[in-house]
Amino acid sequence: MSYVNLYKPPPAPSPTRGPDPYDINFVFDIDASCLENDRVKLTPLIPAKHARAYWEHSKDHPELYRFLPWEFPTFDDLLAKLEAWRIDPTWLTLIIVDKTRESDDPTYLESENGGIAGMVAFIRSSAQNLTTEIGAITIFPPFQRTHITTNMVGILLQYCFALPSAKKPGLGIRRLQWSAHPANAASARVAERFQFIREGLMKWTWVVPEGKEGAVKAREGELPGRGSAMYAMCWDDWEGGTKDVAVKLMERK
Image (cartoon, helix red, strand yellow):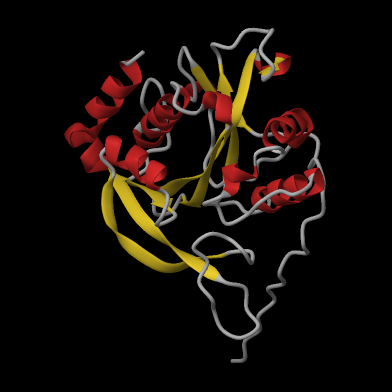
């Protein structure tokens, strides 16, 4: 019997605010009401609702993408990347909202009743294997070294490891990954503070644009690449004590 391969790569995403209603196209069902506490809220990033505010608070800070394998020189670049992520069902981009910010704050977005603090994403997600990764973390300068990162990570951990049958349901993840640029000491510190286990250095995990810090030359005619420091936390780590670590970190004021 012969075989065929009917796969066709999707066309390069164009700048768009996506469909209406916005299809998050994610492999897991998401209950956004479970992605918040009294200080921080995470909600799917909807370009028509959030992209302009995100752009306005990030466009003058290219350093936000120092260790990330992308950058957004223009608003259209941001829209195109958000659409590329949306059509990938293993990826879900979330906007981070600081619920403690008042309406006179420059980052305040009335539709979210809080300040736009950045974004984060579930990436490389598998519903079959019950795995995902926390990635694409971008925290705007006014929110760095505040309660935002700790609460954002804690909320994601609690949601990932809660079973779908729990009173406050979650994804029932078995393995949660965290990968960092090898030179990104701040990212490594966050992972280690929550007691993610460092599993090693993985080579060639990302293709990156020319000029990126730490980029390694690849083969002739190819874009450079880089590796990642890989961390992971599993369900038995969570139940064995990292759950309590997360709660204590989030309780700090």
